[in-house]
Image 1 (cartoon, rainbow, N blue to C red):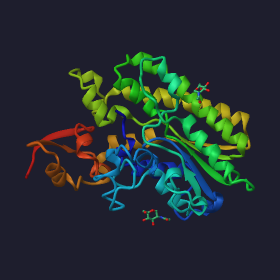
Image 2: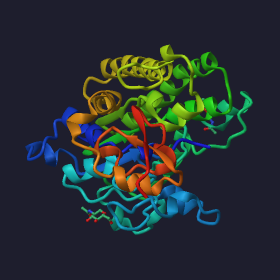
Image 3: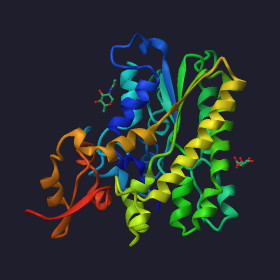
Length: 343
Ligand SMILES: *[C@@H]1O[C@H](CO)[C@@H](O)[C@H](O)[C@H]1NC(C)=O
Ligand SMILES: *[C@@H]1O[C@H](CO)[C@@H](O)[C@H](O)[C@H]1NC(C)=O
């Protein structure tokens, strides 16, 4: 069980991330980067997982994944594009090719995507001692792939003018732990280890020649349908009255983000010649949850009701970004209202 982060349609987050990178549309900064190397989990995977697990097919290789934008499943845990797709587009680069989907060197001219659905920041030995029987694709796994990839690109310093998109990763370390039933305070104690894995990857990549990083924080996963359902509470005080999200889990994400941003500050001090941008995906998502009406009306309500296989459904009042969310997980999302289906 993991939390397919692609279910968040991160339209706002995309623009936020681009803004912090100084990449507003038409910006002359577009030529700053020749390629993107990307690491992460389901928020960023553009095909690695479905390719690697082809013998044991996962839902991500079938509709509704891919239906809204590409018209066919692409291996993204989303029915449309991911943040990384928009960043690549904004930089004027071709799609960042998932490392497992091609062996043609030409496909990696503009970088490579090592992200993989289900990935954790920590590796298997971290989880083994904690009663969590998982053998994850970790950031270490992606770094192994990255080093091998670099060896095939000998001769040029491909990192010097690359943007490294490092994450979001680490959210699954917490997702796996929470879904295993681990007490919340024990999961909270993971945070420093998760952040250290990210910092270690930054250090190694700087050592290899990388000069620009975008490191996103964690999402307000107290607003995620999986959490809203699993940790449903009868106590009104457990919810943020403004959003209907689970307050404790959002504070957890904020804590992760505080530890991460402090660590990034330390890395900047050590490497003044390196650009390290923190991408506030948390704030971008919260702006959706706090003011969904700003995004217009929820056009697909009727469609959504048709899709949900129950007589009653929740009309999600969260605006367009959720219009295409997978119905199974959209249920219970954020501020919801019960209404009759019109089928
Ligand atoms: C990225 O991939 C999509 C889907 O295959 C395609 O429609 C789009 O044109 C590609 N973009 C570039 C810049 O190659
Ligand atoms: C797993 O992570 C730990 C802690 O960062 C590290 O010491 C160890 O070398 C890693 N193991 C592998 C196989 O990468």
